[in-house]
Image 1 (tube, rainbow, N blue to C red):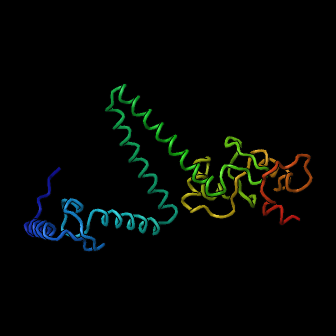
Image 2: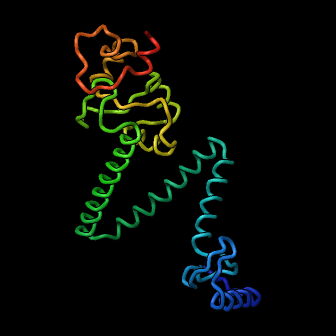
Image 3: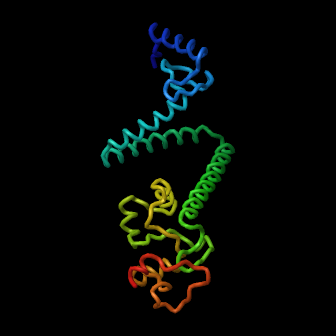
Length: 222
């Protein structure tokens, strides 16, 4: 690959920039006075590294919003293909011991990340407690669509796993229409026209002490 040689004008601009930054390392975008190390080593403008990063994120989302659904899907496919190729190349160059260590590290990181996102979601919807019967065992709990439109919602946003559901809720800043229910109450809603038997009054079970008041769907039916 042929190396590009900077023009004399570009070289002069960079030299002038370096000289000015050493005298006054103030970012022309955010207005903050920083150190020379807070600016890109190669460049001709007077934006700090943080402002360059923020602008890159802004332009990234601006370009993505301008894409159609099919164009966005095509872009995601290209990105995934490129990332998979890089990952394959990286793994191919590792020794068996290094590969085992790498996979263990990645698995540990993924487990931690999933747990943190799940905890954040549950905390935002009242904590690890069923909104109907008061069950507090985390292994029994899940996210419930209050208006019984879970299948439609998951199809629309292509949500296939619980982790994808948690991430969707985080990205959308925890919208209304969701609650925490145990699987017992989830199935109760499914088998009782969208209302848990605890709330409809038709069930034979009783709600344990400490449970919350009737949920919106039960109030609408009364």
